[in-house]
Amino acid sequence: MGVLPIEPILPIKPINPIYAQTAQTNDSANISLRVDGYLFFIDDEYFVRRIEGYTLPGFRLNPKVVWCNGKHLTLSGGVSWLHYWGAHSYPNTTSYGVLPNYSDTATPMHIVPWLQAKLQLAKGLELTLGSFDPDDNHSLPTPLRDVEREVAADPECGIMLSAWGDMGKDWWGTADWWIDWREFIWNNSPRQERFTMGLSGHLRYDIPSSDFSLSLPLHFLGQHVGGQVLATTTPIQNNFNAATGLGVQYDFTEPWAVGLHCLVMWYHQHGNTAVPFTHGWGLYPMLKVIYGKRWGIELSYWQGERFVPLLGSWLYSNLSSVDGTTVFDRTQMLSLNATYNWHPQGEPFNLHIGGSAHYDIGERQMQYAVSCALYFHPSIRLR
Image (tube, rainbow, N blue to C red; front, side, top):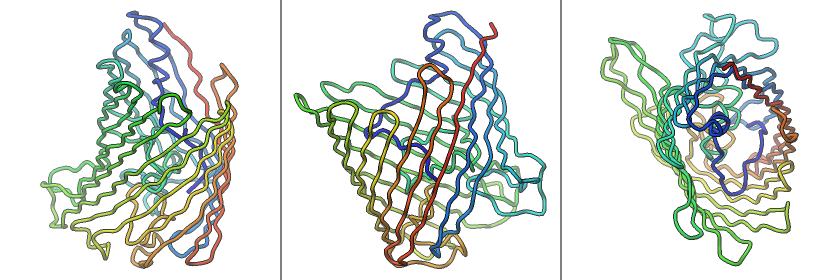
């Protein structure tokens, strides 16, 4: 698990940057050239038995042409190029989810097509078809979605419905529902189709006449591996993660904010013979301190039993990612994560520096991770 920027304590649905640029044009259309990307260097020094350490140096580049039809529809098309310094060939797998295994069949570059349509259905309601933005983590906590997927996985592709806005006096909410299609199959395919369906939402309540806010998160992930037009009789697999809990935030004199959260997580599977148990759980309390838009510190504790993260870091798993068979009875871990983010006002870039330490209580081992990333998103209007 690398160290990318700490999320705000209570979720705030960001305005889509492309839509924000076109909203000022009212009903006039325009075309622009936009280059989203980031250069990164991440070093994970892991020493526990369930996950191995590695280093990720490289960049992701997402050049695209963006066409905005007034304030409702945005179409963008281009490519997503993932490159690691020192890598001269890339495993020719169907799609990258995490750092893939070595393969004798390889390609000199890893480039995938990128096509996205965003439709503003109503105020606070948006439909996305095609490719999702690489840095969209759906506000999922780290045990459910590893932040390193930004620099190791292919962009999600499929359909997503996003909603956000006021829900009455002092109430506010945000939610994403999506399907990410990872494996398409042809008739008589030897492989199985694979997709992930997710729901991630937060309900926020600002306590009147006070500096306190409450949040109620709800997260669900379902992963299906199967299909009906297969050439094999491989069993169908269904894996699930879910989480809910409660968060409270106190806003000191600006720019200080402190939040305390506690999440309970679950794992369940059906038909996955590679996992020697059917269900499990995890407990994830954390304390966050944020200073303005630059500094963030997060202290968390993890305890899990028979838990497998579908998209999250394997530091939180009871099943070894090294051999895929070793089961750890119970994992307990203390983590400290600190980040610094510099974003000059009006500039199309931001610099992130982070570091984390994870102490595995059961194995009495300390893990470390450091990262540096430069995000950029210049845009030139063509018409």
